[in-house]
Image: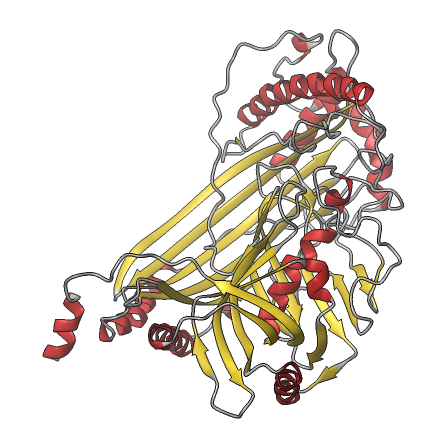
Amino acid sequence: MINADTLEQSPRRATRRVTHRLAVVAALSCFTLLNGNSFAEPSLKKFQATQNKHSTTQASPEPIMKFMEAEMLYTMEHLAAYDGTKPYYLGYTTYEEESAIVAASLGAVIRNSQTKARNLNIDLRVGGYELDNTHQLRDSGRGQAVGSGNIRLSLDDDEDAIRHTLWLNTDRVFNRAAKRLARVKSNLKVKVEEEDQSHDFSVEDAQVHYTKPRKLVLDREQWASKLRAITALARRYPLIYDSSVTLGAISANRYMVTSEGTRLQTNHRRFRITITAGTKADDGMNLSQNHTFNAASPEKLPNDREITEAFEKVIAQVLALRRAPLAEPYIGPAILRNRASAVFFHEIFGHRIEGHRQKDVTEGQTFTKKIGKAVLPTFLSVYDDPTLSVFGDVDLRGYYRFDDEGVPAQRATLIDKGILRSFLLSRRPLEGFARSNGHGRRQAGRAAVSRQANLLVESTKQVSFSRIRELLIEECKKQGKPYGLLFEDISGGFTTTSRRGPQSFKVLPIVAYKVYADGRPDELIRGADIVGTPLTSFEKILYTGDDPAVFNGSCGAESGWMPVSAISPSILVSTIEIEKRTRSQSKPPILDPPLDKQALSN
């Protein structure tokens, strides 16, 4: 699922009760809390060789890196259960996030806050690379939901406090992993042979990279003053019931150490301005519009004039929708404008080529057996490239240098001239794909799976947008349709990939027009949702424009909400289906809004 209007804020924190009564395992007495790092030096030498080859060190490691490394090495040397079970892989990742939100509505500040948190994630595996505790338990839900959850970590670089948290929670995760491995082995004995015999975890090169941490620097009071002035404009429009402008900012530092030798200290920043406005039509339909500005640095955020113009445009769109007629169910030709097309590909294609879905027996596995076969028109190619930080002058939200499993980000060619070539791959191998291509991603507290980053659609059958409109009208006349549809913008969408549900998708337009074949002016409509099934929809693409554009949003899936980008030109499809959107049956407010009286008095 992708949407454009998720605010930049710290992810929801999972609260967990920690018991101090430890489960009985061998060698627990070795978890004596020591001061200093001297005891870790002998084990550290084991990892130096792998670190040197792939080191891209640019800064010095922070103290938290040293604390995590010392505890990890000590754990790998001493932790074992009575039956000899030991971790073969251990990774500590700390997500340190400083976030700020400034929001205003109708000329008044409604939120002004800044927070900081550290959340520890523990990735512990028992067994071996071929078979471990993350293996899918068939008939028991999804196979890899084995993350440690968010573990609050000291904001102070206090070695004793941090290592105590690591020690206590590592024991908890280890006990759970050992029990699950036993279940995995029993499950394999009573189930039919698996189709995919690939390993549970890929062997990857260790990576060492240190970037200097960043703090969030933001003049919240200055922004509060700006947003007050901009949002006061909504007082002129009493029919706009809800409106706001929000600035969200995140500065995130990530610290990762693993038993394989990976040492990563990275950071990223994201800034987003979200503009929203909403009302209710006389027939009860709730109507809303939004616009976002995304930037990787505060310097690239829009100026006051640009924000004001965007706010006024959003308000005008909402009021126009309030007057627009309701859409009726329709099947026929349509144009999806570039950003709308980008969401279309993200939903109906992108989620179905995420690698872990090809191995999960509960998934529909639309493309699992189609490597080397045509799945899109021959004029289309699709790839995902998290190494791209910008497209044109637009910052891409899906950019990163290393994924959440410590693998370098890589461009993955998915479709080459209509032929499926690969999948988005994490460290969960597939038959024919033994290594990750750097797409293992997660929100803090979740287990990493293969996810989209920057999905790009390219075409060799391009025409101008004006020509696409002409071709749309020609297709309408060919099919005997009085009009086609033009989807200018889309707020998001969602799709079903599980076998338990229909292999379908729904995309949520926010600006759609009827384009009449007889030359009448385009007519704005409201209340239409695009629906369909993926394989059929791909066959209907006729032409693309020469106008690629970026949709920056947030995508929610098993591993949480991730920042993503999708880039596509406009597309003309011979057939698309829309259905009526669910709408409220409640009437608009009974009393006139107080702003109405104020506007009249002025």
